[in-house]
Image: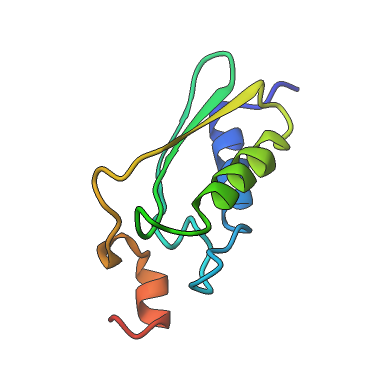
Length: 105
């Protein structure tokens, strides 16, 4: 059975929730580093992400980890990861769950 865009997006999110920021013990999805996940009709994924700071020393490592881990999602044809700093990341990007966990709520 061919996977749907919805099941693939859920699988991608699951993968992203298993990649942690090395400086903050929170996964990159709930940390708000993922700005967008798009799937085209051919099941090619495009992920737009950011870092907590433009000079993040782990940027290259995290970028490659996202690309490699998401590429392992069964059913995807390809993965393209775009790194952006517009808009800049802020604590507002944190999920409510993480804000509560870190004492911001």
